[in-house]
Length: 332
Ligand code: LMR
Image (cartoon, rainbow, N blue to C red):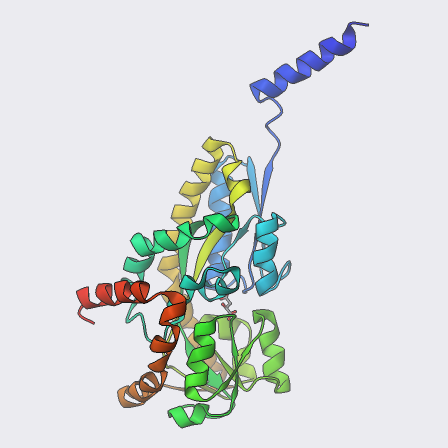
């Protein structure tokens, strides 16, 4: 008769000593790009480092290529805890109400990755992450992809070439404004749907990084690519805040270490990944790659200028000014 309470007592004592806390923790990490991209490789690197650092107490399951969720759905799933970790493009935080993130989409805002790193690694990057906390999200790191190029089935050299064409964009009002300034018809669409939309003529073109275009085979359905470098794509690695803060603190520290290392790795390979993808596009002979002259780039930049006035209220005048200040420190 006394056995039951005794057994319950033993079980309670075991719980208290953590004997049952040995169960493996699973982290689902979902993303929308291919494995062989900067983000894809970064996610795989984090898995490797996290599993090693925790001695197998944590298992990271990586789901690439929108296998689990498409663009908008993945953020909702993270907030609900259906997935634990994501690395969405910075252009995709606007619909969450974190409109300041769209500052990264401003045309020609970053002259190089040095200035960019100064922004993401400093007070601005931290301030942006702070804004996610009220949305059940915690920001862990910024990962690089690269500068964007433009693609279509016709040559895109002068601002006039963009008039009237349907351009796929990510869900960012700044990107919408950018293409409206060019006279194009911007169309928000999930990344996984772009190839088919190009193939069937639902859109005429898009902007993206060479690594994203090459791994999705966009160059096979776009005859022309112009190396405008007019904007940037990078990522915020984020986690469900409640899940992350509920992890045992020693494990969380090990995971943070793995994330730091995976971030250094990802940011060190991003440019090479894009350079190699561009070489692959050129070698395929499917798409003609055009490097615009400085005068052609300037003409495009000039047409995009009104985006700053139009969007300063949305992303924050002071935020833009603080990035301009960093640029000035670097002589831009
Ligand atoms: C896109 O949707 O074009 C990209 O942001 C995808 C990605 O995550 O790089």
